[in-house]
Image 1 (cartoon, rainbow, N blue to C red):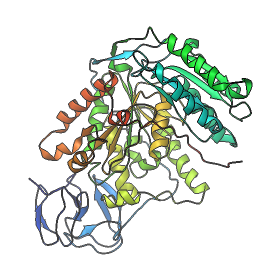
Image 2: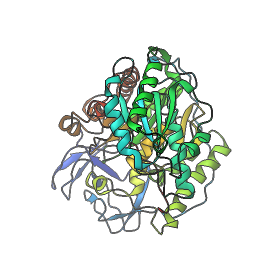
Image 3: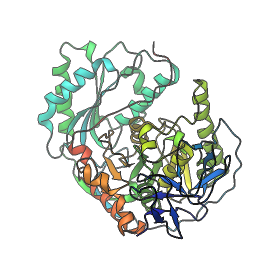
Image 4: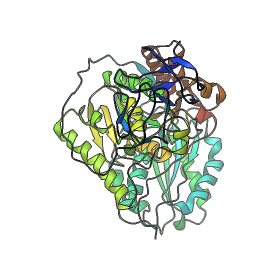
Length: 493
């Protein structure tokens, strides 16, 4: 078995598949190299001499430039590699839109909804309109715990600090996200809980709801009643009563929307876990289903790959705005667009944002981009969609849930326990993580390095997605991890 892997034939570097020592002569598939430095798993070594100022190629694309001469076998990382990224740029569309053969969808057992796609959960949600009532929301969830049991699959409060003291786009984002979640198909019933004096109260959020199933949504303004706990409990009991006829029925997988996210990535994420998700995404979209790729700052350096897969020039232009608008957001705060990867990413072998982005976008597979969504915009087009949201794990995963994802696939090389408002499937990039954090990890993509093929892992991941969609709990759900985060950009009053 090779100790290192070169991802494409153009690459100047190979990635260690285990911890390696200086002086070892190791194989990377088409040859061998003697290491000049210790090389932790996921880190890169040069396969040939690289001159100062030369672009370093990995994944077949530049991941930065050498800041000094680098010998063959030397460690290539943050000490001798620097990003090539800068601010906004002009792009040209060179369409290379893949053709995809349609497949008959598989089926899962979900909950039919009158006004939206089927739910994969039938939960009772309490959504505060403002952080001031977070405590009341949690108290109500505790008091209403007795309502859980078939067919009510749990009672959950989603606390957040926003809904007041916000201006402009921040206030708009809060209203959009709360309205989107109030109609989410995974919630069989929702209590929208307000205080009464906030900027984004129930009266302000209602216009964002549009049409909705009135049997599944209730409203409570705490300042308008004498005992908000008593009244809130009554409303939750009413919603639970309306859910009593809900039952799982066979639903085609083309009605699934699956978010794709990575966090705590390492040097193997773009080699194992993210390509596995990419295979899944291609199969899901071939069935007529929908996948969502987000964390726009982690597309920087790989954006042209996505742009050239846009189905139309109009979608290409929207993708250009998606990228450049996020760069302008960074620059408006006098922040560099390339202040990424994180310390954990670097410890795992990721050196530059291009390195991270080229691995991150592997989750999109090879299918055409069918839609580009603004933050808070629900998905409306089947196929692969790009969504505007930051790289922050919880903010981005919440954005995917608000866009309509009934589930999120989350790859990680370092590990994380978090989950967003919808089931969050954790996919390890390496077997040591999967073995160490069994209570966090749902799927081990590190087996790709142990004899499994991408096709086999893609099949297994599809089977897992259908099981979770049919009611099987993720590790995060079992551990009680359920959180919500809304994107905040501007002034707090």
